[in-house]
Length: 116
Image (cartoon, rainbow, N blue to C red; front, top):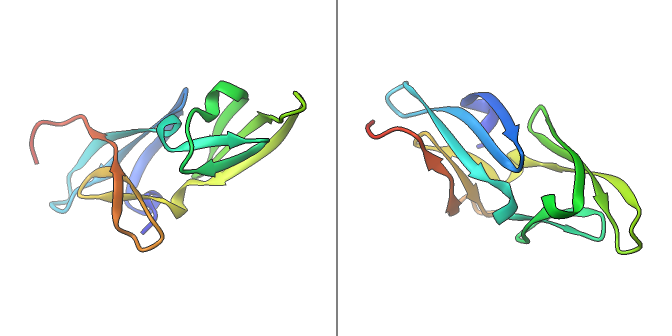
């Protein structure tokens, strides 16, 4: 399930995604996920499974749960690109996690709380 359905206060700071995510007990905890570790810029296209998209991007922003940026191509020009984050990021137990196509966790963000 897409993280935006059970998280609030979703924001982007640099290349880090932050959200207050609901836990099983109904409480919310702030979680973060560094997008540069899982998203890359491949010739002007944002791609899952690559790294460091922000090194070749400008005007990086979050609109709803869509990552948008102007991305450098191999020729050096910039083109608009976007990536639907909800397709591969879920809230699992109050933590932002990357899931593959079968919805199994493959990477996780951090939880800024010490307890449930």
